[in-house]
Amino acid sequence: MNLDLRLDTSGDFYAQKFQPTKRDDTLILNMGPQHPSTHGVLRILLEIDGEYIVRAEPVLGYIHRMHEKMAEVMSYPQYLPNPARTDYLHALAWGWAHVGAVERIMGIEVPERAEYIRVITCELNRINSHLLWWGAYLLDLGAFTPIMYSFDDREIIMDIMQRITGSRLTYCYYRFGGVSDDIDDRFVNETREQCARMKERFKMYKDLVTDNFILRKRVEEIGEISVQTCRKYGATGPVLRGSGQAYDVRRAEPYSVYDRFDFNIPAYDTCDAMGRYMVRMDEMQESIKIIEQALDSLPQGDFIHPKAPKRAKPPAGDVYFAVEGARGKIGMHLVSDGGKSAYRLKLRAPGFSNLSLFAEVSQGTLISDAVSILGSLDLVIPEIDR
Amino acid sequence: MIVKSIRETVAGMWSLLVGMKVTSKNFIQPNITVHYPRQSVKSLEGYRGHIELVPNEDDPFKSKCIACNSCVRICPSACISLKASKPKKAAAKEGAADGAEDKKAPAKKAKPELLSFVLDYNYCCLCGLCVQSCPSGALRYSSDVYLAGFSRQEFVIDLLARLQYQAQKKGAANG
Ligand code: SF4
Ligand code: SF4
Image (tube, rainbow over all chains, first blue to last red; front, top):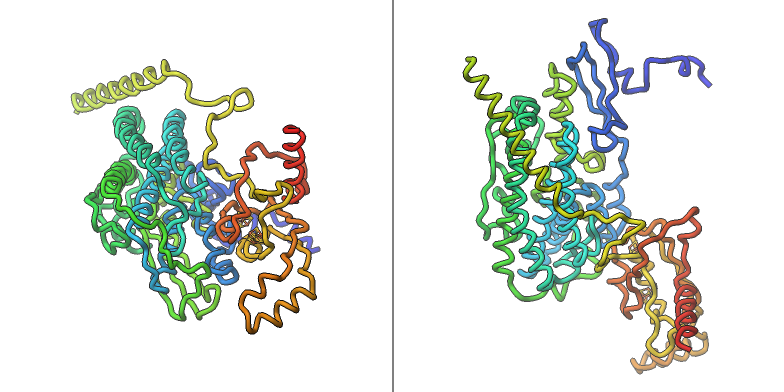
């Protein structure tokens, strides 16, 4: 054993790579990988001068599970549960990206009812994701109670979803050519009830949290991200919309039946953490609007195409399919060589791009503000590491 | 300047009071959480426990499984393994020989009988693909929720033995 290595106290590979600095009055600090505000195993190396951040560098890969490689070994239907495990908060959007890519390359038709069911469940899931972000973000900022309210709402939505999909978090519900189970009247009624309830709850959330001036002091004019920075790093989703650009895949490249619904794309040009906060709060209300419209016009018919292939075997070629997830644009680039499993599947995780800009944005901020910025990016680490 | 900051402070204080009102309103609401070991949730509808075999209508000791291996092949976690007796060779051969002319002949083939059906629940991701792929409807989700154990071995379950045990218990209860 190399004793030099053991005696070396300057840290691991990343810390050493990070070390060289011109100043000798700064401190290198590890935030994570086990830090409550990083929501998972994200590690951030910080060079700090007192309370101020001089440099920051995220270190990734602590929960890398080779989801892309798995797609190359597993057959197409076997890969169905995987996308849900990348982003466990908006599992259905990831599942949708996968089935969407396969459907597009094979030219599978999806019955209209199935498309509506997908929209409804995906939007319910988006609300769930934003609710959890809301609770957890406020927890980071030091407010404990809101997460209890958000979990109250989440539980109801999860109960509704559980009856249909069989899971509460990592759904495996979409199939090539439809969904795995039909929705019934009870689902429709419960969803309607919950939508009505949520509208009341949003008012309460506004009173309790959004208008609260302690929160405003923690998020207003903190972590300003310009549209240029977003473009440079490819940030999408609420991060981009919080910087004033109303880009949403549901509108920009409409997939499924989203072009039939009337909803707004909330955007705030304050560019700060408050902007991103407001985008998500508004987005939940827009999702409710979409769900209600979809429930009103829910067509009858099959929930899965009767001729949907059991063992998908797409022709050779490549295809790209993007959907709007709770964190931004989820893309899947599928290359097929005509075999049982994909030749290559590239997952585009929105969180990865959103996190990348953190190094630039956090420069010169206080550590406590960095926590606020990190939270406002809404990171899900398993999705970033894949 | 001073006026502005005073106004800001007053507005801020007011926002705290509004928040306080919400909190106190919720404080007098009834409890919505369930204190698990002492209480449990009412409905577990739709809950997916580990998979289990569906008993045959005629014989509750036998499962509906025809040992087609389709669940074994689809399972992404490779956690199902089953053993079945091979159909009698003579019968199979006869079937194959006749099969060339008569399509009905393979039906004569002795059905393979399930000997064991082992689920390694440690690796199961509860995706439900096996249940959906089963041509004979021999699989379903159990409602075993409160599973806990001290070792991995406890979750390697022989579902056929479980089915027979359940049938026995049921039989004893009825008789
Ligand atoms: S539920 Fe999925 S992982 Fe579990 S045994 Fe069935 S196919 Fe395998
Ligand atoms: S798919 Fe059904 S019939 Fe076939 S082996 Fe599995 S349980 Fe038995």
